[in-house]
Image (tube, rainbow, N blue to C red; front, side, top):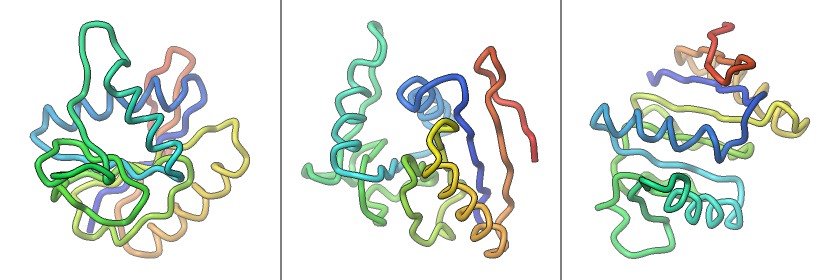
Length: 149
């Protein structure tokens, strides 16, 4: 069973929070897949990961490019795992595939978006019913993560 984390964004945007989480995953030696809710969002994240910080970028590819298996991070809108990732990030209410093969799945959702909140609640119920270890993390005013459940 995968460890499943729900990250409730209340103080920052996905664009602010995702790069740091991806960097931590890579430091663990994990490959990552980021599943977006739409092609437009995937493409926006693709551009953002190259420019999110002046002194750094996150090497990655997307499911529309050749050789995704060789990428440390793959951005997708589908349920595949083209780079044999250990961790899957689900953003913008993306519907998860079978997460059993992953060590960890991370749902990031915007606390100011009613549709994303409702999708997160439904995914929480499904992950718990599936027997996964599930935790809920919420941002504090200083943008740190605090475990709530």
